Image (tube, rainbow, N blue to C red):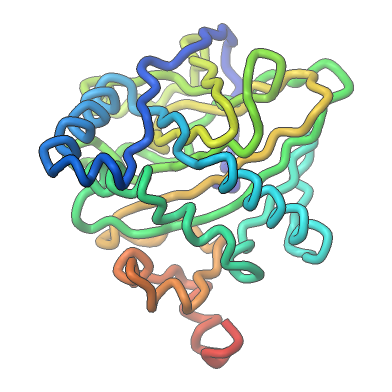
Length: 281
């Protein structure tokens, strides 16, 4: 998400992040519904304990390569990339210029987990790709923040965030860092922005992270000699107001196999669709 106000807190890094699950796959589905249920139960249990989960190999190397190529091509041709300062470049409207990223929203390795965590009123909210450039000076401290408040549903999810790593992430690179928060803690509706217990999440390109957007988090920046690339997707509840107006939904998303996921438009998408004909959006 394009961040709101960040509040800096103390820093202490713990590398890890609990279990890193293998990606759900079509082959798993072929082994029967019971296998899916066991996997989803394990994911949910980890989410209850921490407010986040990681999925190893969610994207294949070929998929990662294609997505990086699409970013390269769009970055060269599009004026929609925004320099947000601190070496971060972001584009929230890649979906308008290419369909190469559509599958990341409904990827079979993560969508069943998203559906399980959010529930039947699941909807798409926001998409962006981000490039964090190498840092040539001492990296700044994280700006610990929560993207949203806490939800009131079974897992206290107001919005669920999905991050894909498109480059390898380890101790020497920029990484995503998050403070674990149990479901019980979320029921107390904490509002601190203390990063003292933050966990740095490392993994190879293709790793996916799903987290409650109300968890405290930020990027832990290093001084690498290579950039880090990520995709950021937000989901929510269709019964709530839209999360933001950063992403315009192309009409094609409302006509595919997962059209229901995109049925509730945000305000900017509604206005764009009303002004431009079907061939234009």
